[in-house]
Length: 347
Image (cartoon, rainbow, N blue to C red; front, side, top):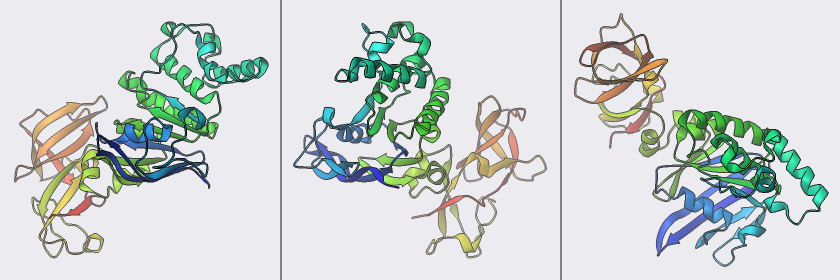
């Protein structure tokens, strides 16, 4: 597989302060990537550098084997063969759907341009809305028009900046899944920015997790969730708790958590470990002798997410079916299944 996009040790600064520091990341042709991280971590800055809106101080950005940004050279955004979908869709209110989609095709012969617009309308299932104006469309339809407009000039890569953030939470993940299917069927290489991990998981083949301007882990969503390489990744991804637990030479844990297999433990652990405990590592079991006080609970429709206190006051999550409805302050009988737990050195 050829790399379509290569970001190599890229640094971007604002007022001599590094917003992105030595970031490296690549996407193969047809791969969908995501820059994920908390607000202010630099993900939008990196996307803007790829688009050509921000200069690169060190390192390089290459597209299809051709360097488009270095410390000495920045190719103009309009010459990059890059499509961009903005957070607010940025549709032209005075143009109908067809003309919005055809906006970047002005150099094409009229017949070819009309054919391309019709193809894009069909691609995003908006053939019946060609003559409508943006204000007559729903948020999801506007999002599809923005996508069609960005894809119309046949870019080498599509960049999406928080593309679902203006939509209802329920619609976001659904649209992310739809957009992923559409991009995959058309073999489009794409890179999205989001702070929402549900969107990232629904869209991406590969996620670059950022913190403080640095890429801290690049992995498939499954690996990022189950095998975070740092405490930051463990804490940021998923609904888990990182707890400190004593451990003896045989792998027996404090807090009545059970034992860990000595074979799977990292070397030089010391007497304390940090465990990332996910909600599915703590299972409701009405026959269990381990009963933990309920600190809080959240109703999620098909499930309850409980927060339970250990004997030393630290808390762990537990996901149950929603008919397991026990009041806060009472206890929940549980068992720990730590076969897939993530372990960090206590220091």
